[in-house]
Image: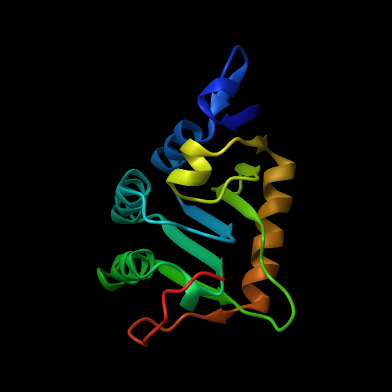
Length: 166
């Protein structure tokens, strides 16, 4: 399935990034993995992630330079884990490299892969494109996120961050 953002791109056979993302999170039963360059504050995403974690679904998230993400996003993500949910946050901060992926994997069965950053810009205002993968391709995408997490540091909530952009 092809997914897009930008109202003028929607048409027959195409779904919007935001609707597919929110639907996937609502259908998650065991695990959600997210690898992203940027996650901006977006109430609809935050609400969906909260519902997901509250259902007992594990959330494993790796962001590029976590300490440079928007402070509201970092506080929200840290709050998700403080309620006893199965949340692990990882900071991708390798020298001379960035994590530029935008991938959400649900239950290792579905993977939303595309150009959209996770926030109102990428999911609504910008013109972006991606695909929903299923089966073996989703499983392999989950394996790549596992490796990205292995290259990252566990993010320590409660430590100051600068909230600047990478």
